[in-house]
Length: 132
Image 1 (cartoon, rainbow, N blue to C red):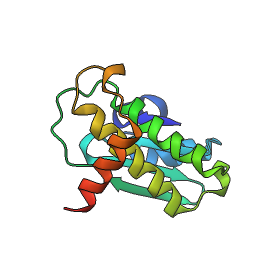
Image 2: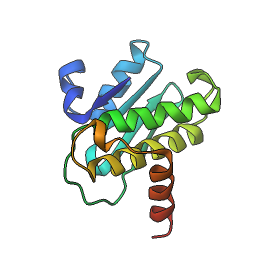
Image 3: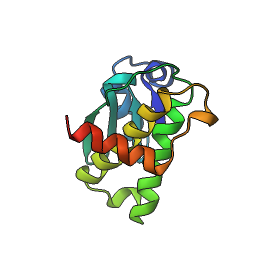
Image 4: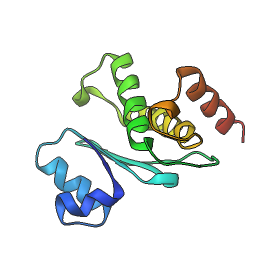
Protein backbone atom coordinates (compact mmCIF):
# COMPACT_ATOMS: atom_id res chain seq x y z
CA UNK A 1 0.00 0.00 0.00
CA UNK A 2 1.30 3.45 -0.94
CA UNK A 3 -0.01 6.50 0.88
CA UNK A 4 1.18 10.05 1.27
CA UNK A 5 2.11 11.61 4.59
CA UNK A 6 -1.10 13.66 4.37
CA UNK A 7 -3.22 10.50 4.08
CA UNK A 8 -1.90 8.78 7.21
CA UNK A 9 -4.29 10.48 9.64
CA UNK A 10 -7.25 10.05 7.30
CA UNK A 11 -6.69 6.28 7.14
CA UNK A 12 -5.54 5.54 10.68
CA UNK A 13 -6.31 8.50 12.93
CA UNK A 14 -2.55 8.94 13.47
CA UNK A 15 -0.68 11.92 12.04
CA UNK A 16 2.71 10.30 12.71
CA UNK A 17 3.58 8.25 9.64
CA UNK A 18 5.49 5.59 11.61
CA UNK A 19 2.52 5.00 13.91
CA UNK A 20 0.16 4.94 10.93
CA UNK A 21 2.33 2.37 9.14
CA UNK A 22 2.43 0.22 12.30
CA UNK A 23 -1.37 0.25 12.46
CA UNK A 24 -1.74 -0.74 8.82
CA UNK A 25 0.79 -3.57 9.18
CA UNK A 26 -1.14 -4.71 12.26
CA UNK A 27 -4.29 -4.83 10.13
CA UNK A 28 -2.66 -7.25 7.71
CA UNK A 29 -1.16 -4.96 5.06
CA UNK A 30 2.10 -6.61 3.94
CA UNK A 31 3.98 -3.44 2.98
CA UNK A 32 3.27 0.24 3.62
CA UNK A 33 5.12 2.99 1.77
CA UNK A 34 4.50 6.51 3.03
CA UNK A 35 5.78 9.14 0.62
CA UNK A 36 7.19 12.20 2.36
CA UNK A 37 7.82 14.61 -0.49
CA UNK A 38 11.38 15.90 -0.66
CA UNK A 39 12.18 14.06 2.59
CA UNK A 40 11.87 10.70 0.79
CA UNK A 41 9.75 7.76 1.89
CA UNK A 42 9.17 5.56 4.92
CA UNK A 43 8.60 1.90 4.12
CA UNK A 44 7.32 -0.59 6.70
CA UNK A 45 6.99 -4.36 6.48
CA UNK A 46 6.51 -7.00 9.16
CA UNK A 47 10.33 -6.99 9.47
CA UNK A 48 10.48 -3.30 10.42
CA UNK A 49 10.53 0.16 8.95
CA UNK A 50 13.12 2.24 7.13
CA UNK A 51 13.32 5.90 6.15
CA UNK A 52 14.87 6.30 2.70
CA UNK A 53 16.00 9.84 1.98
CA UNK A 54 14.79 11.77 -1.02
CA UNK A 55 16.79 13.13 -3.93
CA UNK A 56 17.95 16.65 -4.65
CA UNK A 57 15.87 18.17 -7.44
CA UNK A 58 14.47 21.35 -8.93
CA UNK A 59 10.79 20.60 -8.43
CA UNK A 60 8.31 22.43 -10.64
CA UNK A 61 5.19 20.22 -10.32
CA UNK A 62 4.42 17.48 -7.80
CA UNK A 63 1.63 16.03 -9.95
CA UNK A 64 2.27 12.32 -10.41
CA UNK A 65 5.12 12.08 -7.89
CA UNK A 66 3.39 9.42 -5.78
CA UNK A 67 2.52 7.38 -8.85
CA UNK A 68 6.10 7.68 -10.10
CA UNK A 69 7.42 6.54 -6.70
CA UNK A 70 5.09 3.54 -6.55
CA UNK A 71 5.70 2.65 -10.18
CA UNK A 72 9.45 2.66 -9.56
CA UNK A 73 9.10 0.61 -6.38
CA UNK A 74 6.85 -1.96 -8.07
CA UNK A 75 9.16 -2.14 -11.08
CA UNK A 76 12.02 -3.19 -8.79
CA UNK A 77 9.76 -5.63 -6.95
CA UNK A 78 8.67 -7.26 -10.21
CA UNK A 79 12.26 -7.35 -11.44
CA UNK A 80 13.30 -9.16 -8.24
CA UNK A 81 10.74 -11.94 -8.74
CA UNK A 82 10.20 -12.08 -4.97
CA UNK A 83 7.05 -12.10 -2.89
CA UNK A 84 6.58 -9.22 -0.44
CA UNK A 85 7.17 -11.55 2.52
CA UNK A 86 10.55 -12.57 1.07
CA UNK A 87 12.01 -9.06 0.87
CA UNK A 88 14.97 -8.15 3.05
CA UNK A 89 15.22 -4.68 4.61
CA UNK A 90 18.07 -3.97 2.18
CA UNK A 91 15.86 -4.79 -0.80
CA UNK A 92 13.03 -2.66 0.54
CA UNK A 93 15.49 0.22 0.88
CA UNK A 94 16.83 -0.34 -2.65
CA UNK A 95 13.32 -0.42 -4.12
CA UNK A 96 12.30 2.74 -2.24
CA UNK A 97 15.47 4.49 -3.41
CA UNK A 98 14.54 3.66 -6.99
CA UNK A 99 11.02 4.93 -6.32
CA UNK A 100 12.41 8.14 -4.85
CA UNK A 101 14.60 8.63 -7.92
CA UNK A 102 11.56 8.07 -10.15
CA UNK A 103 9.55 10.65 -8.22
CA UNK A 104 12.45 13.09 -8.28
CA UNK A 105 12.67 12.97 -12.07
CA UNK A 106 8.88 13.32 -12.30
CA UNK A 107 8.66 16.52 -10.21
CA UNK A 108 11.28 18.21 -12.36
CA UNK A 109 8.74 18.24 -15.22
CA UNK A 110 5.18 19.47 -15.68
CA UNK A 111 2.14 17.21 -15.77
CA UNK A 112 1.61 13.64 -14.70
CA UNK A 113 1.84 11.32 -17.70
CA UNK A 114 4.28 13.55 -19.64
CA UNK A 115 6.55 13.69 -16.58
CA UNK A 116 6.77 9.93 -15.98
CA UNK A 117 10.45 9.03 -16.19
CA UNK A 118 12.16 6.47 -18.37
CA UNK A 119 14.38 3.79 -16.89
CA UNK A 120 17.42 5.63 -18.24
CA UNK A 121 16.38 8.88 -16.53
CA UNK A 122 15.91 7.14 -13.18
CA UNK A 123 19.27 5.36 -13.37
CA UNK A 124 20.96 8.65 -14.31
CA UNK A 125 19.33 10.40 -11.32
CA UNK A 126 20.56 7.67 -8.96
CA UNK A 127 24.08 7.88 -10.40
CA UNK A 128 24.16 11.68 -10.05
CA UNK A 129 22.95 11.52 -6.46
CA UNK A 130 25.59 8.96 -5.50
CA UNK A 131 28.33 11.16 -6.93
CA UNK A 132 27.46 14.02 -4.54
